[in-house]
Image 1 (cartoon, one colour):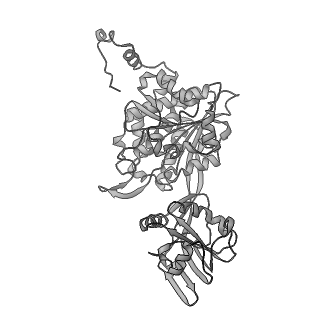
Image 2 (spheres, helix red, strand yellow):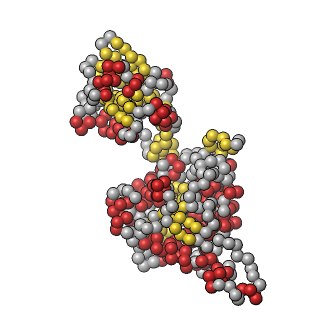
Image 3 (cartoon, helix red, strand yellow):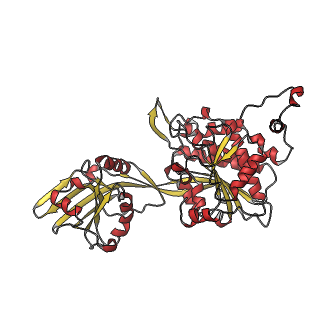
Length: 493
């Protein structure tokens, strides 16, 4: 929106009603009122907090990392200073377990195929890919095609056909198939070389998963059809394996248990009948860490993604803590692991500190500091009565200068790519405030000096005003029935 400048009194009387309303909003708010507390969310504070969160000393806030923990403890300290209570009695940090699995040494990997007196030893660097399934595993057995329902003879080495279209499905089936007694598996992949190169790149990098290690401890390998001996390849293409073929597999991996944290604080509601219901505000405090240098800079600071939303959570906590408590309780949460697959919010959704069936709404902020001055995309607003509320609050507060609009990029599936998703799939109505990506997305150039702090502050004030209404309303937000069936019951959007 255009910047409003102070006008001479003689000119001011000729203003249009809409312009006059915007100008009137610049006056100091009623002391102690809702607008007064919203006004504590300022551009100066947002810029300062984003500068702290996205400083080089945080090292890009990778999950897990010392910079992430430093960030979490900073947020917890701010919550405590405001009078926000720790969600875990005396601790703001909800720790969750992670497993980091990486490839082992090539010397610990081998695949030998035999038939009669013939032996074929494949090269792990070019002719097959050993899957990192356990720290050091080995097996030998006859090759076998699984029978109906995926069963195969105990002691055999399974041979599964796969293509670029169904490799993920095949890998997902592997644990169940191996539970019946086979000692190993070969996935015969019919796909272009460039596809296998991408798969190799994925498995030869460290992978972070949620929870304690659940390794197969059974060796498995992806083998391009072209790498198989001719007779075996032709048989596998026809869905059979000739008698007499055996495989010896050996693989290795590094498996390390780690942990990361969410920061969770809360303010108890004032209404005895409603204080056991909760309005949750979320943002992710992690980013992607240190990576490939671009123009000499290797720290991916993530000022917009998502120091902007995280700063907003801290500002919300301060604003809500500064005044009378609304009727429902409020929860302020900064999660980690978003960039690794929404790990922190998934952990919370499975181990909630406040019951999800009494969580009436979740409002998520991710990347709110760039792009348009006068518009904010609110994804999910068509799914519940929260959407109409957001539109009405924005209309009631023209001083914010914000139009609330629908998802502009449904093909990008952003709905599934931020932390509100794990609340929605559990049945909690959500709003996702998001201003879209930009050329600095996931690059070292996502720096604090590019943030539009005044615009970000207005978005956070809008979230505050929406939150007040949700927390004080007689009724909980209600799902649209069709959206509930799609998102919650069928798990789609």
